[in-house]
Image 1 (spheres, rainbow, N blue to C red):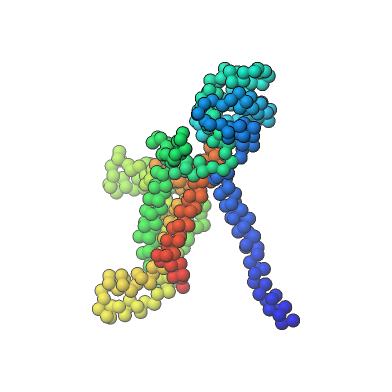
Image 2: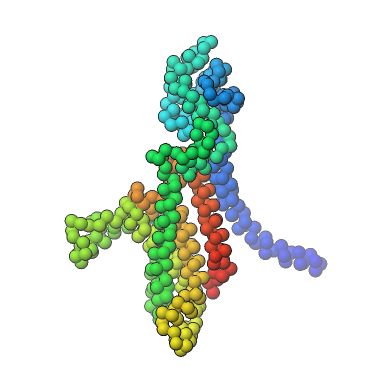
Length: 399
């Protein structure tokens, strides 16, 4: 009986956590696994053109495919037209060989009913691009079920005709620029939040209770307001005829005809993101500062330290866990920030998250969007490991 009671007592806490485990598996791990799969697995072209892809796998890629390949793809194009999926295949191949999307619809409309012993001539007559090796090489690449092309594309790389990995054309190099911009914005916002948030946390921790509650309420107010509403309000505040520019003109800081451009650029992104993420530095820092006994500073002063020395050598090291954990939160959230850069940032203030949204929701390129997401996720995990090695997560106790 005692053994059974011990087993039941050990199982009870585990059973209470099962709903949480199920929630994490369903809402996080399963979508994450599907995203990773989408980034390197794409069977749509291979399933739509099975015979053509099978024949192209034995093709040397030096000369045009044989008559058998042309006849196979002609037959399968007719089937795709009947199933109304020809457009999707054209989009997939067009991602590999740009400018070839229209050839599929044009061929599908004219190829049905053609009976000839020379299918090569018939298809080239419909569209001369069927005599282009690049098109056939693109079909072969698009028909690969497993491929690293999305990851190469996500870092501005591609495979040349000889299979070697090369950089894409300079005009198409956008992703590495966005990674660098995102890193810059995340770092800048983190530093701004620390510089602004630390004094606020200090004031909350060391002011009388009534004033402390008022300050804390001011910090918490943004959490009670929609992020979309806050981002939109910055458009009103920062526009050329907005409140901020009106105040600068009224105080004579800038002339009326020289109003500052504070939105649709990097400046607006930094201002809005700093305001939105400031509480994530203030709250953990305040939690640590409120637990530091004031007698430590008085003891340092009695030993001959001036206020600056006492802060640097006594107070700051004890507050570092709260400030560091807050900075880590802000940095990670900044990397994935989306709504604020999309509304306030304009073209110059867009981050990598906006490109993920574009690829998935507008370009319908789930594979590339998933590959970029995986790269960002791995970057955050690496950052966390480095932070753990440098600071130590076990030291970041807020009490």
